[in-house]
Image 1 (cartoon, rainbow, N blue to C red):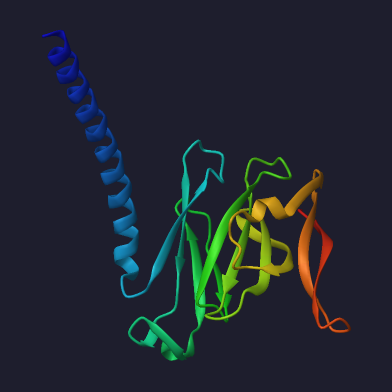
Image 2 (spheres, one colour):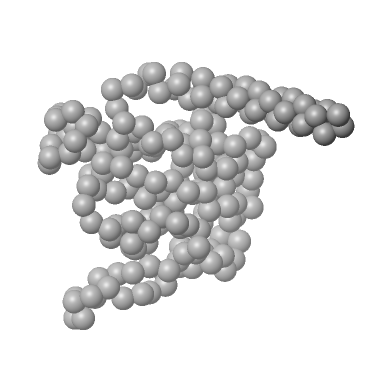
Length: 196
């Protein structure tokens, strides 16, 4: 009898937990659907990037890719010749546009300059190739400010944050792989980027 009561209580608690999670997910999905319905003819990647504006809420980025002439498959032509991505943010920070890209990735790399807003990297990519540029941005005066970029393997998206080392309040050291024409190969190098 005690075992049946315990199992019944466990089932009720589990169902209650799922109901709360479902309510939270439904609210989150409704908010995202409202945004996505405005641009529903495009492919949009939704990425959770943590709290970038220090308001204690998880922020989301939306990376809107180009519309391809042949439905959603890329055969070399973007509709209207616009092969670009648009990056927007759920926290109402202004968006950014990158030309010569068909997809992209965004990562929060933390508040390096300790001003209350996180710095980010944005990695636009083309439909082939694994080497490209990692773009570094800081948020100043209500707009994104470009700090610099580093070359590297953009297909390795495990954690761009692991490629940087903070060496001062406004300074980071970035590991990059650049093409060396004399060796006809990529070599590892470090680059200093100022965050200001």
